[in-house]
Image 1 (tube, rainbow, N blue to C red):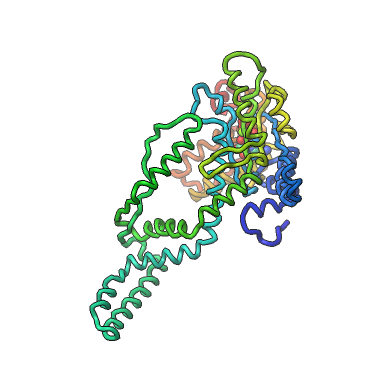
Image 2 (spheres, helix red, strand yellow):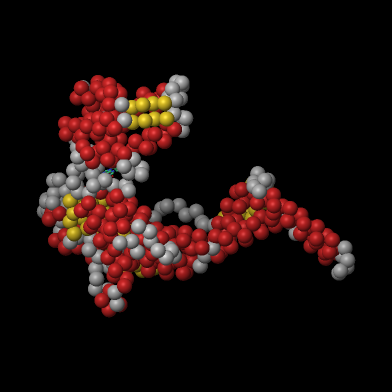
Length: 466
Ligand SMILES: Nc1ncnc2c1ncn2[C@@H]1O[C@H](COP(=O)(O)OP(=O)(O)OP(=O)(O)O)[C@@H](O)[C@H]1O
Ligand SMILES: [Mg+2]
């Protein structure tokens, strides 16, 4: 289905998608897992719905955070990744377990929100930069021309001459030269020409001596303060036109983008549409009241609680409220249950969806259907060598079977198994193809059986290879 009326930013675009359309988008990359797709699609649409609600009620509608439960390699992270892309919303993914690491003092949970803020600002800045791109490009062109055909000579002439005499010719020549240069420039014929450029060396190299929770903020303030005190050092550098264009374009678009507006919009968008993906949530859940690392697990949960419940986090761009940020958590939850989380946190994740284990049929589809399907990736890689590669239907079935059986007999690593099987299968081809004369590779069920037979037969070998 097409979406009518082109909306301004990517954020607006996604929010207009209906849940069904969102699921359709996810279907392009993720096979199966309908329940999870529906849940995230509804959550995403609810963000937009909330925006339409009258002010008084809007604040009352809290995001319904989601926990995705499923074994490893069944698509949890994949769903989150694709969702982020199509949401156009500020999105960060963090491993909850990383906050438990012993001796890990550098990060507190608020850093998630600081990262999200940075991301939101970059996102909005990029959007704004795109809006001013044309103006920035023409300004860049002008400045490049100034470098290529400096006006100084013409000016000098003008100053020296009597008004209304020779300098008109001089000036005319300058204009004509400039026009010619512009043509050459646009034709890309001056890219390697060297010009001199004033490069403002921004920033102040501050050695990272500050660390620990909260220090990031302080360090930033310090950096900004010192940066303001230091005189802007300019440096003349000789660079090629190609590089100069890049630098000047950067400067020009920075000039045209109003950073105050960017920050305001970024924070507003983050507060209303931001998404945090908390991976490995099960790693911080656990039977409580034991000593040792479990204490820190519960500590992490307590630390997470305020931002999930809604609090105000100081960032370098100002205060950010997290009340309406959507949290999508994921975990295998094999040894522990969501009910092992502290009650307050459980209550903040009212929606639980289970992802199914993948079947042999799913494997067949995962191999071929997604737009980034493995089979297509390998075909494209071999194409780069000028080799056409073809997989018969039976071959795909066979690959899926081998992967499925390997999952059953060894550890179940879900769709990740397909990667190992595919690499084992194509190793020989990928190695020898550039030297051999064959321009066509046909992978049949026989090929698969033959190449993987030894590995599959030998349990020890397959443990290492598959
Ligand atoms: N349902 C699926 N459809 C398409 N591809 C999938 C599916 N499930 C997994 N994959 C592929 O398998 C790989 C691993 O999936 P993913 O990272 O989503 O696993 P996960 O569920 O997050 O596992 P973990 O619990 O280990 O983090 C990815 O390359 C992904 O493309
Ligand atoms: Mg994952």
